Image (cartoon, rainbow, N blue to C red; front, side):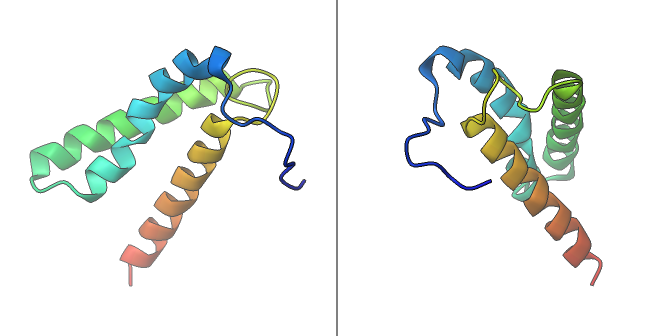
Length: 92
């Protein structure tokens, strides 16, 4: 699957659903840059709550919002991959 130049990844009609998901997924970055243990724990909790929501949304579907690849899917994928690499490399 390649990126199609004629594909619109930001779909205005689906932006509200994307905005609702984005806050929790962005918690990965808040956790990474947290300056206190309390801020870190709050952000991590939001991340896992958001991942639970995403799992429910994706049950039986290929895309988070709508029936095609959107910015929400791309951002989620990038966030998950970064988190996995960060977790794997933090052990070393």
